[in-house]
Each structure stands twice: as structure tokens, then as C-alpha cells.
Length: 333
Ligand SMILES: [Zn+2]
Ligand SMILES: [Zn+2]
Image 1 (tube, rainbow, N blue to C red):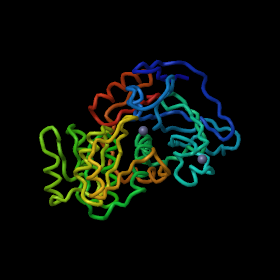
Image 2: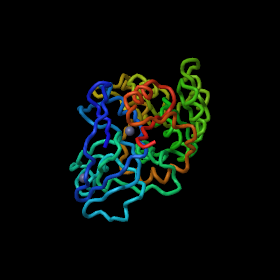
Image 3: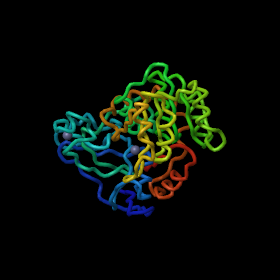
Image 4: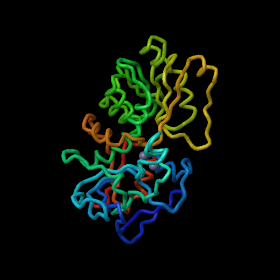
């Protein structure tokens, strides 16, 4: 089978490797759709810790083609979407925090490949009526839902999302579903802004020509938003959002800032405004909830392009450019 191997920097090669065989508890799936995530791009830019060679891609969907010992054969033919790691369900990390903190996680290879080997505990059957490309967004949606499962969104509250990439847009969508009333999305790309409106944002801000803090003041009567989410991964933007959060509000890190970066805020403000800062580690335990939430959001126009596996390097560059929203690798189209 063919795989796209990341070899460091932006170097990705297409290689022929043996198709995997499932061991006990494992299954092999044929990859129909594999989303390019900001984290994949950050890895190639040295902004997210990773060691090449590696096969990237962790948002993949496709039918099960083979199962190993201990996995029910009725799985074969089912389209499944997968979490990032199998999680044992028994260790301190799994039991106390979330599947992402499992202490026994085995690292499987990624989804920019024709076939992929996973553990059956990672695989969630996709409902038949759900489009497989949309199902591939269960993983990023789970990241957002996991974040919001750790805080309370007050019914009717005001919220701000800075950054309209897929995670920012999904943040808008989840805020809307959880009862936020005034949702401000700040993003320079007009196409992303219009999808933000589709997901529930009712105030759109292009920060290149409109002052965001004025808009927040207007919408919130000068108090600031209850929930301020940064969905880009730039520490200075996180700091800017913190200034727009009202007393006892939440500052939420949706974007992944580079490892080693620090937050350029006046801690005095956080202290006296009694602001809660929170992040989330991947999908947490929210994957199944994400699959059932996907049909509640209108994904039309979200996928901006599909690329063959051979074009993975090019697809990564296009995805990194900031145009469009979500790009997919579709190995079999
Ligand atoms: Zn991701
Ligand atoms: Zn565990």
C-alpha cells in the first residue's frame, strides 16, 4: 500500500510499504477521508513536538477491511471514525482524567495512507446516514466538546471566538448548541466568517479593518464576554482575548500555542477579574458525543479541497496558506 511519510520540515515522500495485518484486538481500515489538521502542519513547521519519520493525519474515516483475534467479524464493512489512541480504560489516567491521558497508550501510525491499523477501542461506527467526510471531523469536534465539558456555558451568555479555522468554527457551533446568545467571531478570511455565521456567530469581525474591542464593548455593554476562546495558537492573541473577558469569565485555549511559549498577560488582571483559564488535551472522552453532534451542524462549504495521497505535500502547503477552511486527503478518489 501507499503511505505519505513525513521526513522532517516540509519533506513528505510517497512510499510503498506492506499493508498492515491486524494483531489481537486490532483492525485494518481502508482510508476514505483523512483531514489535514493544524497540528499536522505545526509539526512540519517545528511548532508542535514530533519526530520524523512519521505518517501524519489523525482525523480518518473508512470501512473496516480486516479484524484481528478478539474483534467481532461483524465490524468488517462498517465505516468507522477513530480517536487518536486506544486508551486502556483501566489506568489512573483513563479512570481519573481522560482517554488522552492513558498511561499505556500504544502509538499507531497516521491516516495519510491507503490503509491504517488501529485498535478496536479507537474505532467508532459511523451512522449510515452521516457523510464519511463529515464523520472525519468527529475528532476535531471532540476536541472542542471536550473543552466545553470542563466548563459551564451559561444559557444566553456572550462569547468571543478569535480565529475561524475549523476549530474556531466548531467552537462557534458548540457555543451556539450550548446556549450562548451573542457569539462574536473574529477572523480576517471572509469565507471563514460566512461559515462562522452558518455555525451560529451573530457578530462577525474582520480584525484587519474593524476594532474588535469596540465591538465586544458594544455587544456586552462594556463588561466583556463570559467566554473568550482563542483558536489560532498565538500567545499574543490569547493575551488579547483575556482583556475582553468579563469578571469571572473563561479564557479558553482552543488553538495550540507552540511548546515553550508563555502568556504575555498582566497576571494582576487575571487575578482580580477572577478569570478561569482552561485548555483541553485532544478529544478527551468526547468522541462518541462528537459523532452524535455532527448532524446538528451545517457543514456545507467547510471542505475547501480534496487531494490524492500522492499530493499530500502540496495539500499541506495549501492547507497552511490560510485560504479556505478544511482540506482532506482522499486516497481512493
Ligand atoms: Zn487534529
Ligand atoms: Zn489507560
